[in-house]
Amino acid sequence: MSSIRFLRTFVAVARHGSFSEAAEHVALSQAAVSLQMRALETEFGRSLFDRSGRLATLNAAGTTLLPEIQQLLALYDRIRLPRAAPGLLVGSLSMGAIVSCMSTLARVVAQLKSEHPDLSIRLVSGKSSELSHKIEMGDIDAAMVVGTGKKPPGSTWRMLYREPIRLITSAGMRDDDPLRLLRTHHFLRFDRSQHTGAQIDRMLRKMGVAPDDFLELNAIEQVLDLVRHGVGITILPLLHTRRWHDQEGLRTLSLPGALSSATRSIGMLERRGHRMQPVTEEVFRRYAHLAAEE
Image 1 (cartoon, one colour):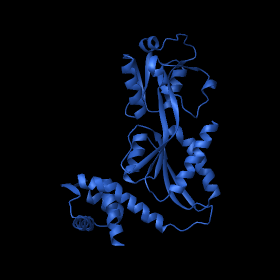
Image 2 (spheres, rainbow, N blue to C red):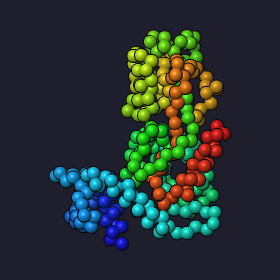
Image 3 (cartoon, rainbow, N blue to C red):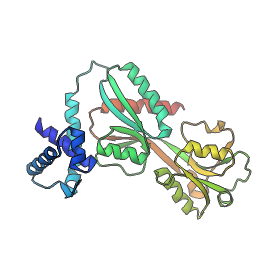
Image 4 (cartoon, helix red, strand yellow):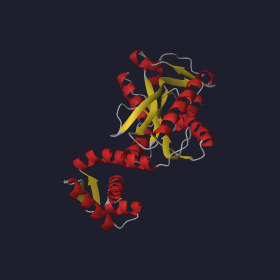
């Protein structure tokens, strides 16, 4: 069906930002991609791209159409799926997760694949912002990410649990005043380019504290290991997958005032109407069950 092929090419151009890059991914020449997009614009009766040299970015009309076209393609792909026997799941799914969620997600996926031999699930790891972009571009179907209050067009979000945010020090520190600790010790930051790091930075400003920044890392486990060895202190979410009452060498303190109840949300973001929703629904259900047991 030529119209479906044209729509897939449109999504590829939107994803890669140029006709030449899209051509490589849809196995067409650059000229063929250009002709298809001209035909699509003629059919829709409006321009869909801002063309500048080798680049071709979506204009306002194209940006508005993108999530609807992605949903249409997902519906078409779902219609084409073979019908599974009752109780069996089939098809291919791509899912992502932030590092702290990957272990639980991998356990769920391994269990599902053992029960449903015709089900293929590919897992990728990344930052929440990266995974959200992959969902928006159609590279993956769903991901376990940090909730930000915003979601890409054409996506849905469901929360799984909240993780409290605490001040964390080595077990040897005896001071219980969080503000004094933050003003007198090296501070180990979590990457401010990530949502959690930016959230922690806003919390520090609310407390009126400009800590002595010692280093900034994008791996929570590395930060915790340095805190355990007395390199500095940090503010981090208490990961749901850790047994915090058994954390040898670490202690946690509540932040002052209203910040004592601060949390970050973890949940599943997915493309609305994608063809593998019965599978992501089962993944969500099993993940929530495992998380409740941990």
